[in-house]
Image (cartoon, rainbow, N blue to C red):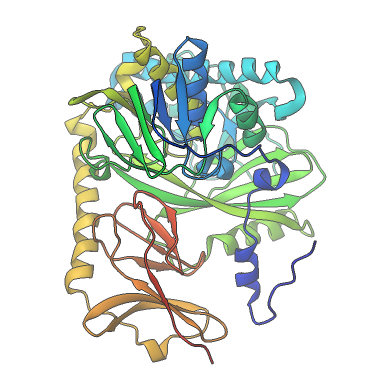
Length: 502
């Protein structure tokens, strides 16, 4: 069935309406029931994305009875929006690790991610051709200064990672140098996820409201468990843990082109305007345009990706476009392990930056070891209890600054927009009877007004003109223009008041 858009919508609005990842368009999983009543189990995992499903899989393999609770559907969060690069090449990370945490912990990080690739490879073989697994190299590249790549190469060699500096790679634009990691991989993330989840007990449409001691509370019932795993992208329980003080979120964008030709390998540009590339079938995935959530610049990231596509792959039609949101820790290392020192039976996996696939597997490896009382050789470097003054204090102060700015805007900031001055297709903060509202006016003049105050911790929301959403610059919560929650840590929608159109 074809859906014909309203002719009143602009081209940009029509594209936004149809934003959907190529993975979501090409795979679907069977529906699971919601939780009904109270149950008891050994372990409960909150979140049915890659990290949660893999953790539950390893626990079940170890004989630990486990259930997974998912607010929406399996893989409906960030997993469906990944570019699905399975690599230990996490941009320029290894030189920084050697400087910040020393050789021993840097080695832990490297070995953990190398093992993660191999574990994916083993599981992919088990499911044969159902997950579109491909062994391939990964490249970091630059068309400017090569000094950083050379230092990263030396760091990788010290840590035992097979690496090579190359100058000729198969890209249609100039590259001065690239750092190649052999033995990496790529796959279809949802096909893989659905295969792993097939035999697991997953309750969908079961939103967790609160966790207390060893009880997970939902509207449909309670789960009593000895072990509780937060694998829900952003830990929604502010205390203990205080993860909202130790992370921010960033958005990034992907455009998929039907190119027909084959690109061997995965590519990630380290320059400020660099793009990421990988192939799936006849489709080329171009990623880029990252920015802090709530801090969108003047231009559109999608327009930038379109410019890249037109410049180097002219005439190739866009078949999909989508965006993703990533949690960024203070020191660039994920938080994987005990949720807080006061909750010994709670565990967390978050802060994967742009590298959710290997980080999900590393999370499952570490958390299953901890829950099963096995020694984890990788737990120390990823421990959420770490705080390194040298590497974390400046980012912590920066995060605090963003939070204070967002709160002050909400408390004393004066809105610049007037309701009558809003143009169709635009949004802005307006004041009405002493209260601030975020108002969007559609192409027909209908207005949609929501509170400008983020329900998470009270910061003022900002209008995202590209995705037609209200974004929190403090902690990254997002809402569509009708107030429906799109991204955590906020846990509820915002009430929307709809005005008449022209």
